[in-house]
Amino acid sequence: MCRINLRPLGVGALCLTLLLLAACSSDTPAASSTSAASSGSSPSPCGEITPAGGEIAVTEMDFAIEPSPTSAPAGKVTFDIQNEGPQTHEFVVFKTDLDPADLPTNSDGTVDEEGQAVKHIDEVEDIAACTSESLAVNLAAGNYVLICNLPGHYASGMHTAFTVQ
Ligand SMILES: [Cu+2]
Image (cartoon, rainbow, N blue to C red; front, side, top):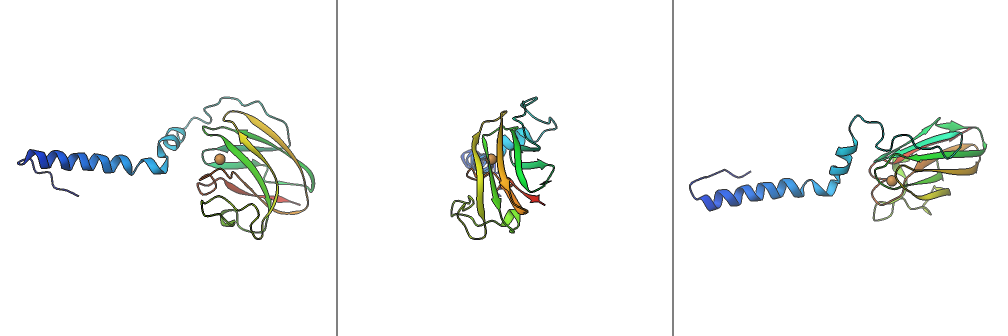
């Protein structure tokens, strides 16, 4: 912290400028401007999203992924993925016994889809904000993890467990 000293005015002004710069630059990398705007009480900036169809409703947003219900019987499972935005998201299904937050990652922080102990099942890429997509997969009984693998999104919390009985 710098002391505000008004006597040499130039130094005081420089000091203030540096403080402002520091405040600004510490804000930007976290992309906090968008998440702060979306973390209000309003449920979705999209209003009602027309469902794409499927027995497992999956809500995606910055930055969370929430299936309902969180389990399904083995066989054909259809996910109805609704992106409440504000960013584009994707939906990736892995069969794995790992913790959802502990999948193998690449150097850029995205999940390594060919990584150890994870089996990539299927995915839907680039689901635009305020739209929905349907994904039907054939799932054997076991533990699954659902994620968004766009850069930074997995690390920001877009991962969750899903169980097939
Ligand atoms: Cu995402």
